[in-house]
Length: 506
Length: 113
Image 1: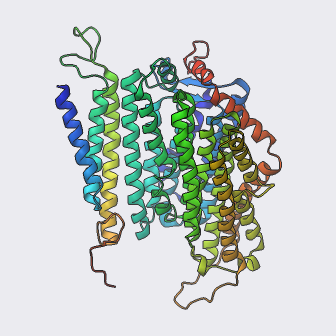
Image 2 (image 1 turned 180 degrees about the vertical axis):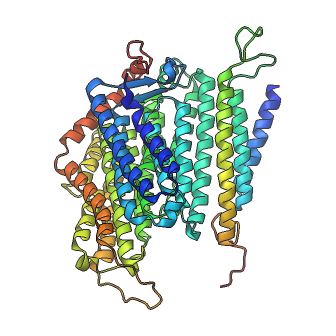
Image 3 (image 1 turned 45 degrees about the vertical axis):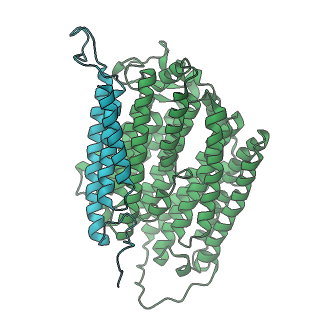
């Protein structure tokens, strides 16, 4: 019996329920937030260690044997993603102790956060394609409510785009699931992979592949479907932005990885070629969009789009090295991007604005914060010896080995432009002299010592993770290598789910 | 029956897409609803259409596939929740932004401070 497979879903659900029960007790909610996400992280680590020890773990829900019941499957990629969910959840929970106001907490910030984490973890662990849809919706409905928390004007406008496009993507996803069921008569992903191999010479498979690509492409914010992201991510409270930036788009990327390695691997010349150019244009359009922006969080949002391109590039090249690069990139990106958003929130707390022209002089007043910004910023741009350098290095090397020079050139160029954007933020926020304060600006409240620590702690922790991956990347590389090996050999996944010997009784 | 079913599906999708491409929130919501109805029907059709066939083995000469029916039920419930949310969201947005354009700014309106 492998309970560790279900724990990462159950723990956030349970914490969500508990914080709902204590709706009015603010202290209990805050305590449950930290304890719940902390134990999510611990259970994720447990899952990862046991997956890397025993191989792919499967749990058949209600003891209905696959393909009749819903299977929860944890392979290495899923387990790694769950650990990342735990890290980000924990960091954001700590951070939101300081930044989420009483008003937001009264509207259920913490229960929603737990629900979102449950949805994300569920999407990483499910082995059933319809169940994946359900987890997506769990995650989406929590994210909708978090996005409009506070109910300001800008949030409403961003939320309408976000909600509409995501619902459209769900609709496409659902009809693709329907078609797939009509074609092979099963919903279990391992079983689908098995049976789809026997459906030959059927153009329907390519149609399905493209439908899934579009549906997950919208969720992952790939070109040309990314417009909802920069329109909405800069509007909610900063802890929510950080949570979204770290996890939500990566669920889309994860689903792409899962579907295009396990199910649609028959015709890579066609599907992965589309993915390849999609990745190239995604990188370029994201980074060019960022150069035109002068708002801290907007710049970061556009960079999410461009970084998504690198991950999809890793998948699209479809060589062992490229998949390793993709997985490594996801790990690096989740940590770095969340950290940048946390820093932006800190800056906003100090100066009361996200607009670059109204910020300045922070290097003089808070030199350590400047250093803490530089670590993830340079890592994002790919400066050695930080984590981003190795992530980019692996992907680009895979590109050169497969002689995809066009896309590789774009990847290199985008790295340079990312550096430009990060230097722009650095120069404007930290380096230049503080702007003249106007009379009509509201005075920023001074920060208490405790609040300061609650904000510094997650930022320092994530920066240490970045440094660790950069300076001692071997264990992460080995993990990514092992997970790429599993991804490129779908028979192992299929055997683990369908095989009689591993069917555990819960 | 298949032809009628397919025509209904096509019509729903057609109207849904048309409404979705409007720039006002209310038509967009209607469009989303129509499309999700179409998808629900489509899911149902994917279990193959059969008349007088209960989804229980042994009750008739033929059986209908029960699984798509379960899927449709789930999808309807989720779709209902989502629609309710979108309606409330767009009402709130219309109140806050003082117009119902999806961009939050009405291009036709003569804007004055």
